[in-house]
Image 1: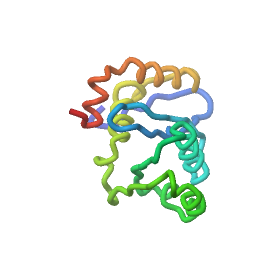
Image 2: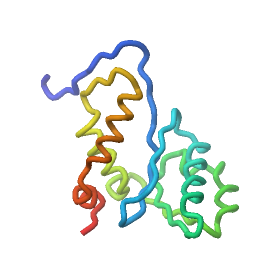
Image 3: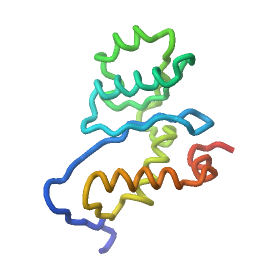
Length: 146
């Protein structure tokens, strides 16, 4: 193909979904959710789900500079939860510092790239199966855990 990405035709309308994920360092526990859009409402819902999961903990969340993460529309939520939540911003243009990005890239390279799934549910099953089968040692390596 001469260095070009292979295009895999699919029937019907292409559907785009987004994974919002958070990991607890260094255990690897966490939460990932699938959303149909990338909005500040989705970010707020994800952060609220994390607060609900870790009811007794103070959370430090490393976040990148995606517009839906840094919008002033989240200010009230952050003020309301300042006793349980602290955002740690990453420098601009530094996806290499965002540990979850390493996992997503590895997942795409090894599970979804150049593969046709008949339904979105099959794609989700493949991703979940891949995550469940990923050896914890490899996960640790991706997260930079010695």
